[in-house]
Amino acid sequence: MKRWRIKANVTREELAAASNYSPDTIKSMEQGVRMPTPRVLDVADELCRAEGLLSAAKEYLQRERFPARAQDFMERERDAISRLSYEVALIPGLLQTKGYARNLIENRLPPLDEGTVEERVAARMERQAILTDRKPPVALHFVIYEAVLRSPQVDAEQLRHLLEVSRLRNVVLQVLPFERAISDALMGPMVLLETRDHERFAFTEGPFASELSADPDVVSRVTERLSMIRAQALSPAESARFIEGMVDQQ
Image (tube, rainbow, N blue to C red; front, top):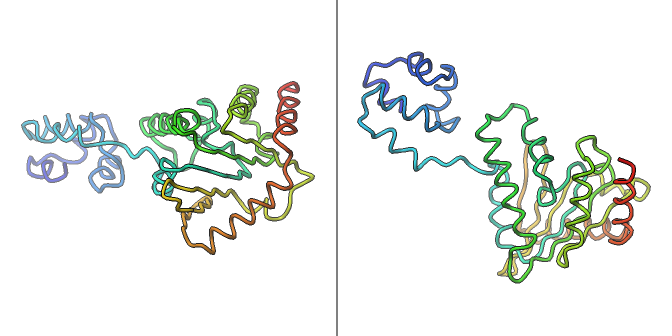
């Protein structure tokens, strides 16, 4: 796009004004920092007299549906036969309602553009097919810290959704109450995956970096921590009653 613009002697400011973007946004698109939009390609094509060559690129542009630091994990998740996770701050993505997911994705810094928000919300909802659509079913086990459920973003709809999903035969949901929290339960979220090839992966996620590892030592440490947390958590039946009590309090 930049080469066509320079060849046509069109300034970045002219392209920005014609496509209703700021010059800085056009610059970030030309530098590969942001994905060009179909609109800007069509405007650039006409303005730079590219005879359809820029517009034709639209079909090859697809927004990345997941953040870069989670893409490898998402690939492994699609191939999983079992998945065990613990979450200390947020409702797990596989258990989120659309409203909860949108609230999280919209309120990030730096903010995402609306197109990226829509793509990521849709991608998160599509991930949830793993709950019901896989044959044979994927064994799914979730442990959630009580603080997650006490968050102001968690409404009655989200709590009822947790109860609904927990009734699936391939899903186990446990709640770790405040009074049963151990130190390992405060160190952040963890996921264990096993693929069809019986490879085991550990995934840990932080605010700025994430790690997907098949290292046996890492997998073993994460397995041990998750086992300790599961042992302290309420049973599935107790957890359901705990969440039902929170719904009644809404």
